[in-house]
Length: 387
Image (cartoon, rainbow, N blue to C red; front, side, top):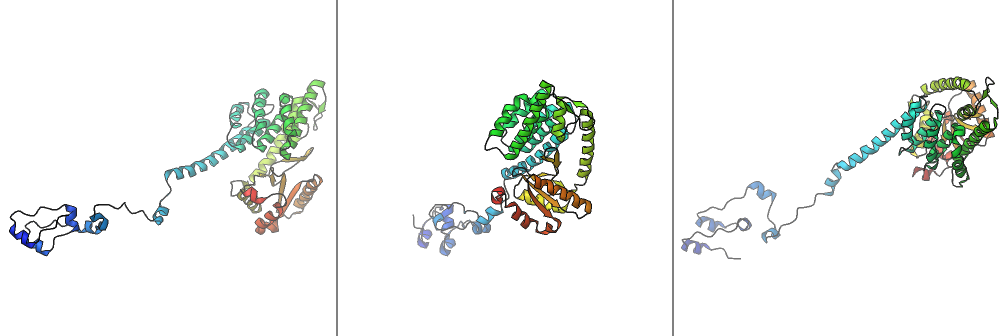
């Protein structure tokens, strides 16, 4: 680098000194003697710029430092990017859509409308096991209304479904179509003989197979069955439908009357379900809300207040049924005489059939998590369920 001219050289020279590069001017400003002799005052850098970007040793040599990394705290404070937001919203929308489709499948099953088949067929192919299960159940409820051939064809592939409850409900629905489900008997037999199949699925498969075979016998051998209410002889279709719905034999006329009476009862029960559990299920009491919350937190699938047959000719409505483990949970939350009589009858039925029953009482409500953990741990590895 050239040496800057001293004062004597400046005085002898007629030529003004050659301007040094701007960077050099900033890096080595002229001293007082040079300022006095120079006609061109050095250009001052703006004060703000001088503060914002002071030169360091390496910049004088001509190199530049890469920009300083932002502090880690700043990275934490950054809001989630669009992809994260969309992913969270998509998951929420998926759950909302699943509930909507599940409600639609249930409504179609109650519609008694033959035109519901096309929509239910599409729902049996849903990506949601819950929707597939309810769509299969709805097809069974429409036995005698929708055309049996297409319905059986829609249900048979669901016997190979990856979800056990879909297989269970499909088998039950096939039983409702009686002799028309003849081609499904081999599939049902394979499920029953599968050593890895769930016990509750096997029980449903066995019942459906018996109903189909009896319907075939009625059709082929003219076996005679009579309505339990009016004594009228029933055909194979009436036999299959009434067995599927009530596990009793009714002609179509009595079937409609019994069905209407049951539906009115169910409606009255549904109107009492005004308390919303954390997973969206509507229950009848705060104790049941706490039970539903515990089960959903541990990812345990349950069916709430559904009619379930536990003995030939009889059905119960447990508060909670854990179908994957064949466990029944009853919350005994009242203290009236009539309620206790019904409770004792129900307890006796569970005991006679050797069912896994967990009883929770009103005084247990405020220790619900502790008591449920203790009682469920007899049958379930709760850590595995929580995963």
